[in-house]
Image (tube, rainbow, N blue to C red):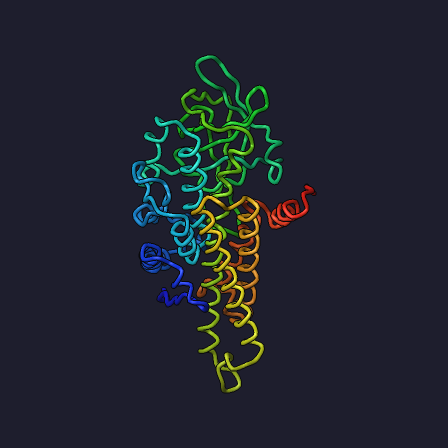
Length: 391
């Protein structure tokens, strides 16, 4: 196992924009990634296995619900700290960041924002500690970019609900203890339900043969006449806006996380270019390689500033869904382009598991699609600036 020599680029002195708590959170997460994640991730990706041994550490560094109040087991951090944690974890691997994102923004957030006090007390502390792991069921086999068309439904049976349907492409599904599932009631209104593993008729088959997010567990959620206690319905918000509010939080985390993947690819390519000798000199002296590296650091710096400003707006309660959408789309596209350029700098070595670049590139092919595809995010921005939806 090669040592993790990562050095984070900070071309515009963004550290000056961070407070002491932000830096402490970043340094602690970065140290954990170097010690615990980096040594195991290449083997896990090659074997297409989720390294479950990392779950305890993710909880310990506050990656599960970092912005959830301490009274519910969270760390009570601000939005920039949350973003930084996602950046540092995704520097290690997008799939591991996905696990933390889902737990925080798609499971803990809806329970905190839309749940009753009893639900918060029952689930949030155990989710924060990693005692429980959750997943989020919105996407269906026939409804991805159009979640409002979902077919999953539940019926009122007096003292309980009966849930039927299926969800697809669900991170954490194969081992999740609970699922926050979005389904339509008999009037066609979308509600959130907490489904627990072990409920009769509930199954979570795993999705295999992925070329992307290979160290992340992906699966389906199948509901065949699942009896759901009425106290498991999230009471404080319904309609499509409820799950979309969760996606805002997740997309925000991705906007930061993708920077981490880009930074790792850039740092790897820069170090390689300085060490790789061709024609008697390091390839770093060549104009074409310098062009690639200069463009990489420029795009990373722009993305860092975008994410920091968005985090400031989130802290002030001013960030719009469209602003979050822009940052997610821009930063993931940036990271994917950098991964491809970095792979070229490494030549044939770039496709091997000895370096992280090809793994990042494959992972980012999923990240650019999930939580809203690249094209859909373009249309969200288009609608926001023109006032005309083009969906």
